[in-house]
Length: 196
Image (tube, rainbow, N blue to C red):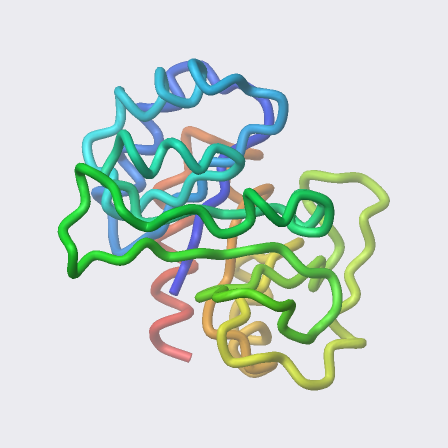
């Protein structure tokens, strides 16, 4: 399972890249834009063709407006604002059988309290997008089965991610360091993941 995390910065015509990525294979898109307003999020969501594989970060009310896959709650929010951690699953756009997916970020193995379907654990390797953000994967002895690796993941180490016991990987820097090559990068990594 491969997730792609949006760049924290604005990217010109970003919706075009995200639509191409969504059409390129079984990817989950994590729409995470620190500092963005609700209106900015909705502006981007309105330009995406398929919301069913989109996780949104930071705005539980978007589950009420769009048929998104689910909600990602950052570690800082999870620790300081328990009232927003798990919003109501009932939404006018969602069928009763489509319960939202919930994910959160962690920096050490071990499941936090809550009904988390996925845990984004990292940084596993040295970050591509954040200078000085060193990988800690060598310290991750027992990885929970619902953990997705994040931090420095790229084609050269995707097989290692799988061998460490992660159920998936989240890509950020390796995708957005070259947006024009995003689809090719994703497809290469997806193929390596599936065949390792």
